[in-house]
Every structure is written in C-alpha cells, then in structure tokens.
Image 1: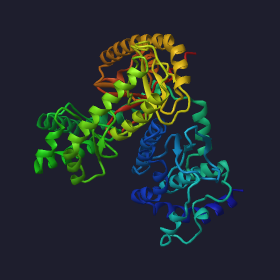
Image 2: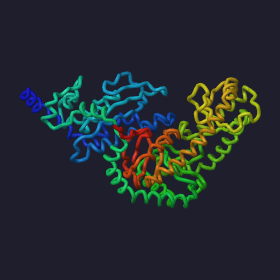
Image 3: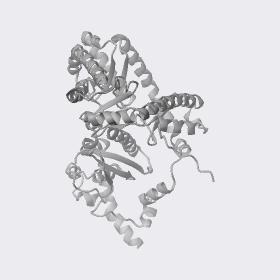
Image 4: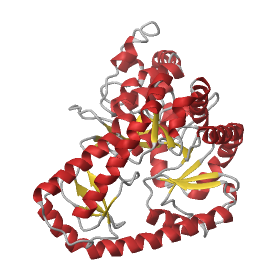
Length: 492
C-alpha cells in the first residue's frame, strides 16, 4: 500500500502544485468574477436582508483569501459562508447546501477548508453552480491537463487515505471539519487567537483613521453639512479616498456643492437623493455626475417638500397615523421612488373614501412597502403596509391592532433606553474605543449580548473597536466582529 501511495503522489502532486502555484491573487479575483457578479450587494438594493448577508460573507471571504496568500501560512480554520445568488440556476450544487429564499433568491451555504487559491476558487464556483471553464482557458499556457484532473477535482471527490496526510504533512480537511463541528468556538478562545492580529491591524489603521476624521471635519465645515456617512462597510482607506475625491471637486467647482448646505452626504452605490433626503454620491460615478447632482439639488428639495405634504395627506386619511421611512428595515429607495410609492398609496385611499375616525391612530407609525401583500404589525410597534392594500381591509386590520401597536411602541422605547445604558456600561467596563452593531442586530439581541458581556472579564477588548454581528471576524482595519449570541466557556 505504501509503494502504491508513493507512486500516486509522484504522479499527481508535481502537476497539481505546478498548476496551483500559477494562480496569483489578481488571477483569483478575476476567476471569481462570475461569483462576484452573482452575489454583489449592489444588486440587492430592494432586499436589505440579502444584501447584508452577502456583504458580511464577502468580508469574511476576503479575509480568508488574504490569509491564503500570506507567506508561510500552515492551515486555516474551516469557514462557513452563506450567499444569496440573484440569478436562477437550474443545476443543483453538489458541494453547497441550497435553500429557496422567500425573496426569490437562492441561499447557498458552504464551508471553506481549502489550502490554496486555485482549489478555493473552484470550490466556491462549484458550490454556487457557476461555470469554471474560464479558469482552464485562462491558464492553458501553464497546464494542458483537463481542469478537474489537474486540480484533484474529478466528477466524484477524492477520499485520500490517512497515510497520505501523514506522509505529506498536509491537514486532513475532513478531520478539520469534524473537529470544528465538535469544538464550538467560544468568545474567550476566539479573542485569545485573534486579539493580537486585531491590535496590529488597528494600530496600523490609526493614521488613516485620524486622516479620515480630519477630512470629514474639513469638508463638513467647508460645505456646512449636517453629516457625512457611508451606506456600506468600506474600509478606512476607501473612505479617505472618497473624501479626497469630494475635496478635489470642491476645489475645482465649489459653487454647486454649496447647494448641499445643511444636508447629510452619503457615499453609496448610486447618485441621487435618498428617501430620507440625504444626498447620495455614487462611488463609481465621475466628478461631472456629482456636479450635475449638486446642481439639481434645488429641484430635489422641491420634491422633498411635496413628499412631506403627501405624507401629511395620507396621515389625515388614516386617522392621524405617522408615515415614516425606517432605513434599517426598508429597501434603499431614492426620493423619486419613495414619492411614487406614496403617491400610488394615496390615490388608492382617495378612490376608496373609506372613513377613519380623526386622530384614532394618532401616535402610531406605519411604513409603506412595495414588496408585501398583506399588512402586518412589527414587534417594534409600527405597521407594515403594502402600497396596494385594500383600504377596507386595511381599516379593519389597523383598528383591531391599534392597542397592541401602542403597547409594542412603549416596549420599544423602554428597550432602547436599556440598550443605550448597556452600550455605555460595556464601553466603559472594557475601555472600548467604540462599540456598535450591524443594522440587522435588533435591540433585543444587543441587550442580551451586552448583559452577558458585562458578566465577563475580557482584557483583550481594551482600546478596541467592537462590532456586534452574526459572525466572528477581524476586519481589515482591526475592528473585532463577534456574534450577538456568542458562546461562553463550558463549565465542567
């Protein structure tokens, strides 16, 4: 058996290693283009949940790929990722676990336990049922063997004998996965393994963080802005670059930018004005697109005034309920899109003439949705109302749920106070530089997380930026992400 194993290694490994070394970091990114196109968060603007899942998974994938390229790395812990795939693909994935999303997307889950760029790229593409032919065609000068043969990825996966791993010193992926399933990551163990890496990244990012604060203050003062924000989790270097770009535009042509006085500027995926009235600067747009937007701001302000009047009219037709737009819970809409949605709903109400008792719903809130079919009451107390609701059914639903909505809103207000107190207490106890949460983390989850944190002694957190999320990760600028439902040490 040993002789046969040596013969197999002699025949397979040289070719395999020759091929795997040929894939550089840039080539890996290029090879993953079909995957990036399929999961890119920009295409999920109307679906905030799927968008955030993909953003978080892309961050973790980026860290995994970065670590693979580090010289001298030995092995990586298995990393489970979930992605929503936007296009419909009939072929079933053999490696990933597919689920059907109610939003019309495929949810694909897979665990990375690869040890080189090539096998990682192939595993991702195969898990998502995406083509891999372009990888072979782009590397024909390196290897002439068929792709699956060359990479050890035949029609059925190879199950190596344990002696193969003993002989080569490679990590057995099945053993890693089995160990990972048995040994659940605890907060203390993860911080112990990743604390030093996070401190180093944070220290390296401090000059850029200071530069970011300086640029933000200078531009806010120059343009008399209320705030400057970012819709997505870009790194500090990217944010500085975007502010430098806006600063250069202000030097070249300041007059149009002065129309933004008193506004909040948000760097995002497209230019325009948001449903909340923020000036959106698309990061892929060039300066003349931004200039044209700033020149058009007076017309946007006029539309904003008409939108407020429309909200007031809907409120008066629905018993005094307040129409609100909650950024964290609704699709990312432009001002034009939101106005059109409100206008459609208002016309429905005017045609039906269903009477609501004046001020019967005063003090309550509602948000309007285009992708819902039935009204509902959110746990936070606001009504989720479809734009094409039947007014008669809507009247009955809102009247019967009004008291429950008021009770939910009272609980929300109390919970928010408790959440803020716990955030302050946690920040102080652990001497955190910053404690924040992902938009998808509810106040209930944040309260539970902070209460449990306060029971711990966590010296690793001193001076750190801590984000409460759904996964463990060290971000590129040193922010620590931990899941809200982290596991503590098991007391035996």
